[in-house]
Image (cartoon, rainbow, N blue to C red; front, side, top):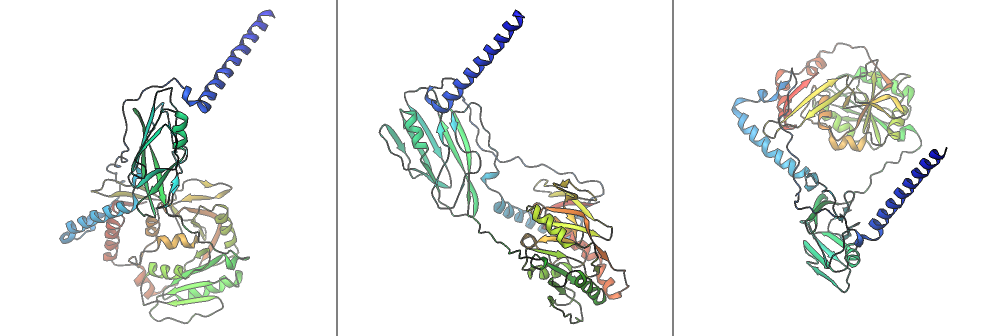
Length: 475
């Protein structure tokens, strides 16, 4: 028993000692930086470096090699123009914010590492700058930037400031407290107007150097939609029709069975347009045979509600076509841009696996049908994917930003999701479905539904140039 008491007492003593040591370290670090004595000198410095190029991508077995679709007489010219356009694209979409930054060990410098955002041409206080160093006769730090100037509004005896209002500023003082007071009053002002770019700050003390980013960004004004009180103020139904008026009329009748007041927008590029009338129906006549994506663009451009529901003209609403359930998912997960349902029992969806590849060759894309990523929180019947069937609810402004390429006139579906990859967050849900009308033979429609080989070649050339792809595998 006495041995147990002695062991217990020893454990308590050791624990108490640990607490005292921990408190001493914390107190000295946070309250008395000038008393810190443990400091490992760093003699090497790391400059920000671009992220290494991704390297050559690997085309999956069975891929289409898009370069083979180019006409021989224009191949080299097209490749050169494509390379030039890629450089223009990179100039628009990359900045210093994409460079790798390394935090060196045991640095006495404190600085913001994330979230410092400034408006262009506007002075902003740099938060969190401080030096934690052992006792010295003098303390000297320097900061430098490339797209702005550094200024301080602090003045005190015993401190020297060089470069105030310039791209490089140096501060020296024999008092660490005074130096840190000045650092806490350091301002950055960008000198170049840009709506979204960045600057890198070099912050040095003796052999220590740190880099941290400043995001220069023009704030966006929100664009909000008044959701109103019923589904008609939430959603507009959109469709595209071409020489299939009997099917279109069946669709419209089925919509009115379940949604009597909801607005329906129809884009129509038939050769002999028929007049479609009815309350809350907008019928837009296009030049003949403009194509699938041109009609989609027209229909979506006229939507004024937060969401639109896309349906084909030969679909039919049923008791399982509950638009409200899709709206519920979108409202519960505001990051989503689109959620698809099922047509009959077909919940078509796919995932796009994309590797950027080398600049000279282009990227590799693999479309994997029936592949999804994972389910949505609280909605196990819904999963994230890259693309969905032609029955989907979408955020109007998000789809308008991506758009539908009107060059794709006949057969095009995956191509919209390819253009939206990385911009649109897409999900597929099994608990909402729509019916499909029985096919009725239509010679004129079939003729345009199945394009000639030249159209397929044009699509491959478009993917080669516009999407900078080397190969595509549709699986």
